Image (cartoon, rainbow, N blue to C red; front, side, top):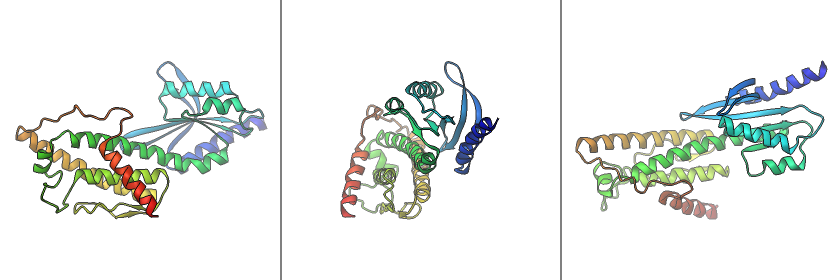
Length: 269
């Protein structure tokens, strides 16, 4: 009976940890996958920028170490559910084969203490991924219009105009540079774009401030794109060229520019 209580409290402690981070966490959840239903010790879900981030956790309150087979089982469940990450939290540790099975996958093996230390950074990483996806979509939309139209509809300055009211490429580069710095937790992050329409502060001292800046500026960018594209449509000039849409794993021009900026900033520190 005591062992059962210990197991139950172990699960509840893990659930409470995720709840304290602002995520929705549920113990003993039954989740439908593509192929079948799965019983999950702790099911964690949070929503950010319209996207669900889902983690599943197996709590192993055992005297024996977790084996390779148990890791492979969780990997298949993560895949079937479509979870972003899976965790096995063990009191007794893990066999070497378990670490081999988890290497280079989205299944992580942790003690509870390690989980508490690492989770905050992992959540930030998942959120940064949603910003990265958002930037890809914005960039593809921005570059699908000709330079002439981008100038005409206020998405960038003219060739001889250096007023820096708004330049889409400049904002995209600064946003990407900021995300690179955040991935390495390299704060404070310089957010100065020298654009007159820049929103928020020019420096982020922590993740919350960076997130606020990204939301403000990407929302503003999306609004400008929407207004410009609607005007193009009204004037029968809306003919986006999608031939150069970014393919999976392909680096964009703005991404390459951001890498150059970030490397130069790191050298100056």
